[in-house]
Image (cartoon, rainbow, N blue to C red; front, side):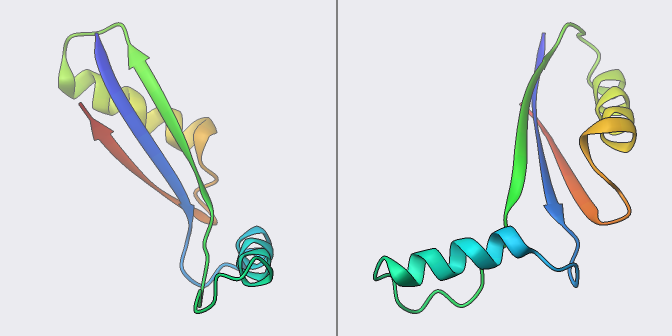
Length: 80
């Protein structure tokens, strides 16, 4: 069993309206000095394989096909 975390974030230069809304809300709650918020998503996965190289290849394929929109998003894979 291999555990992994995939973090997906918008590429630099892509507008982030959710991040902007969070930034505005934080200011309204009294958290001054928050200059920029970028939001993303995190996937924690458990793979029923023991080969780390295969797990990494499978995770990359999952990201390319489903978990990330690679036109506007970047992803990082961390295997535990």
